[in-house]
Length: 91
Image (tube, rainbow, N blue to C red):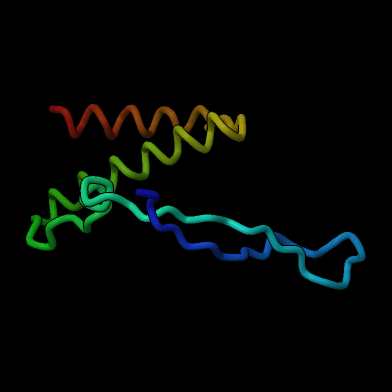
């Protein structure tokens, strides 16, 4: 049985003539229960420290991903500060 999906149009900018918007069609598949579970919100009863740790984890992974994809380099001062703060956290 084929999975259901939803098709939407997404505006990606201005068309070649610079007057009309340009759209692409995107098909969004219906997720399985297992896939949906991966996207469920984290327990709102988590402590502030747990939430801070999770936030740091998310932000660090995004920094790594963005710097790799965009070939952006972090400054030496930023790298040093990250290292210093990680050392303090891990003590």
